[in-house]
Length: 369
Image (tube, rainbow, N blue to C red; front, side):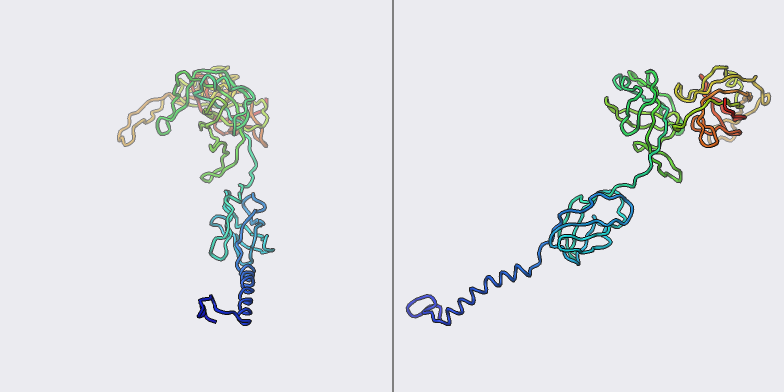
């Protein structure tokens, strides 16, 4: 059969053989298309992951659901490859996670080395729950505006920290500020206020530098540390003066021997109350009685010199000691009493912050009142 015959007709004159060949060719078209559809590689997809939220650490199995899954595929969570891919059928497979750290991960389906599908941020790994700890923070909301100072009241819930158990009176602002290495000064703020308060803080135990601290609002709860808090009227600072546990308190009588310069010891009076950083909510120990000041020696020469000095000047101090009986509220934890976050035990150090003076000493005896 020629393309054109001598009369110009397309394919010329058809015969039976030509017709049969044409029918066969036309029949092959759907057959070939059906074979292509049947045997071609189907595009795989991801529909869901169950569960979509897990807790770290641990080897957790998750189920992925999709279409056209195949046995030799694999799944990664960002760059963390799954431990296994257990094919169930073309719509489901079980994948083992690989001790994923806390975070949010894309779930990625691979066919050999080629990415086939992805669920962005499909898996969230939560940090393992840790038992909350509660500590009573005695300190000061400092450098407040008038609106913020009015907000500090008993029962106020400080976001991310805890409730205010007790609020003191408003007073002009002074903030304990670092001005040099190890040097702290009370710096005043104009047209601002301080409010002393006791806050029952929720915190989490955290290991730092080989020690354990309790952390809240990303701040280690320690004396003199400052926590940035958010009030309804704006951001503010809470400066910690003292830390206690929520354990119940009981009256205790403590006898202590304080030592130092005679002039400081002579300032001590019956009725003086211990108050760190002039915060009436800290401490609470009151001098019930005190003995006379006793001289340690007529005088003692103490060297005071700048670094590098070869002949430091001598300053004479009249050192003395004084025994004092204190009445205070102490927390009993196990077999010991604690005051101001420190254990009251014979031989342990004790600090007393009186009006205009600070003296250090040693505990001589502790007895319930």
